[in-house]
Image (cartoon, rainbow, N blue to C red; front, top):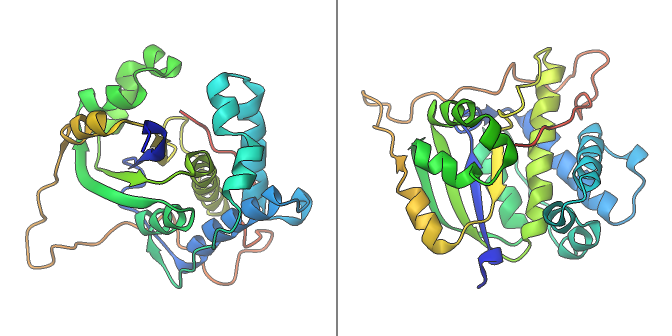
Length: 252
């Protein structure tokens, strides 16, 4: 495999320990289904608001016109890579990490390694060292990423461009859920999920920068994971569609 056939997925501190209710899981999956339908020609106005947030974000990425953005967010490539994929089916609530696992598996990726724990500054720099915003806000980014647990997964597969669509969908859905619950969007760098590329050798080094968490004391080692905001009910509040409020994920 080439280095482009490997995917590094990081659940950031704001998403690593989150559980989603059944309606919240449905918002994420319906948003992704809408993205696939849009790629194959369906009019955006008939699609969920989360899908429309993804479409707007793709347009903003492409407007930057950099070679990297044009490659990662090529709609021709996304459409080709989405041919024949099966949408995941999840019943009930689930950890956010489980939802994203189902999404990446559905587009042809296999996870070969996973590690949970806390990052150090070296690991954060490996993730973002080439990012212009990181150069301007290095300490802010480091403080955020080392301030809580992360879940790092290394994946093999060929649909690496389409994986960016999964990332944008998860971000847009979680922002929509926050808005529907009356909560503000998180600040720019707290965008839940990092999806990038790293060679096997660099990944081994990166995983060494993660310190595993100590197991919690007591017989219930699983503990209680926090839920994402106020859990949605099956009957939604007046004026809020099941797809959530329109929102835009911010990239870092």
